Image 1 (cartoon, rainbow, N blue to C red):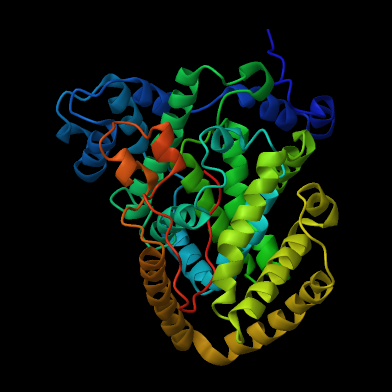
Image 2 (cartoon, rainbow, N blue to C red):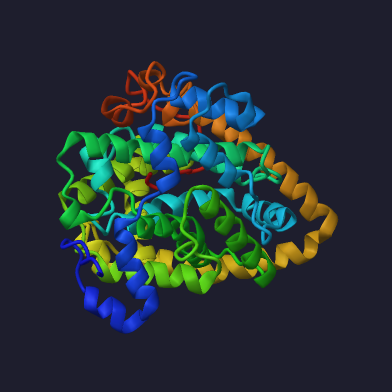
Length: 428
């Protein structure tokens, strides 16, 4: 018998009427999480803390884990069986295409992707409950920025690549959060579905994929058709490794767009936590990072940076959704909305003039700049770990606890005044 959709969703009948089988799958998989990873999170690993055992299996193979549980062996049987459709050359080209646009990518992941995701209060419930929503947005951004750095690197998603390992660790972080929320006993399954369900995992892929690409287009970035295909291929494999179901894992632009549309259609809208998240993200992280690269007195730079970020958010998600999130309005959005075509024309001309050899040098330089920027972010925000599963508060536990998920540093660091490109992260 078909199970009813979570009662907190809206427009469920319209989802099926408009999207047919895809709409039905979207609703049904609100009850589906990640059985393989969830089984590992529920097991006690004889070899030690789950995080340590996982890293051994990632580095040396599952046979290197003494007394590996059946659940861990099942997970690695899946991970070690690379699909026939995977093309690592295409993913390497995708990394090269994205790396030369690191600055605009960082801007749109914060001002477009994260803000678009905040329009659905159900999707943000795990972060709100674990208090990870508004705490230290800069530290969270460094964590996910480090994951993104490993993924957007040629060879990063190979079985022995760091992007692959980081993505599996993110998968297990999700599973531990689900396990923790289940033990708390205050998760409303009937209203919200399972924590971090397949549809919202699919939307996360769209946040890194089409939502970011569309927002970058508004900033003047233009990818070729081949580059776009390669980028979507990269995110398809990331989705596979992070535990996406084949039915919902987006493989192309049309899939990404459908996921975005279903997310917005069935969302009950943002709640107070989502609005607080946007304020914290913008005022405590995005705007201060932008202010560092602006000229003039610090107070003036802060005002200009805040107005610019809020203006960009309105350009990227539209006035109606921005109003629902309480994003301040202002005339700057009209100026920002018109700069894209001008920048695109200039960028295309420069690309033609550079030629293949100079483009390759530009790509290699961009990787170096990106890596240096991540080091700068770590220093400025005093982040010594890579992902939350190795944060100081989580290091002595087999699973990230509520406290370790809500605070990844013992002190709130003050960023330095050194100029930096804006980077950010998508919610997880």
